[in-house]
Image (cartoon, rainbow, N blue to C red; front, top):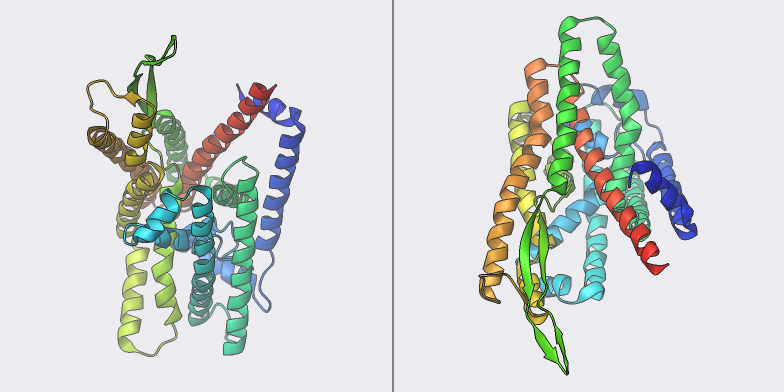
Length: 427
């Protein structure tokens, strides 16, 4: 099914057309919020401050330009993602949270996500205070008193909660993940600006810059092919169902397989890594106007570290690799799968049901995730390596954009196809 046929099928069903319209309207509402700045703000000064700073530009990219606009949703979904990470890490510490998330079904997960929403509120308020204080310390935003500082932070917190609500409404339409689609739309809206800046560089007819961009386009095509290949690659674990006699009939005895994807985390590790890189900044930005000497020294060290593309790229790679393992452990539960197979009379040839099957799945997923994490981490930092060598601006942001756009597009198309297949089956 090609894209044209997919769109025809998508628009053929009335309920799917309605869902598409709802998703588009919600994304349009997000773009409207991203362009509503806070009061008494010089947007041009903030935009100039973000120009040429790849670290800040990457955060602004994930917020869809809302950060450089100093808008109501300037934090994007960063606080919500951070709250989710914190709770998922706590499932390894507190058995009650683990039981709620894994064993209580939809009710437990709904309660789990409600805790994430509650934690998002103080995180958003602290991050808003941090970013505003950071811009005040750099003389980008005027300081109008602590009352206005708190008021602006509260406005940004409300904007983050509205954006979180928009993301959940999009997810409920079952045409894609709301968080991913919001980030996707933000990147797409930012792409014309990146392309225009690249055009200005190329229009100078500098041979070195033109060669660098041509090489980057070739790498971008390779990245797209690699992402599609990794997303579609899977390990097929053979399964055999035991024969069962019920009355005069024999059931089971069939052979099939269980597909295990090479990269089960998709683009989520990239999003998690950016959220983790953003969160520590909040603590230091809150103290940006402090007169303490050691605080100024720490802030200078942090800024120097993040300004160094080599160190930043290394940290980025490690975080993406680690979060690939982390999210896979959350999304794929070998113990639960082994238990379900045993209850249904299925087994892997040559592997005993129960603990040996659990160990088999754990070892298989560990090996697959290792290669998937390496690939995803390498693709994430490849544009930074290229930018470090050539010195051409905007390439790091463009490479990360390609990675997210392709991954989100693949996952969204898969969900749309599953919805269409369900309706074909019903008719």
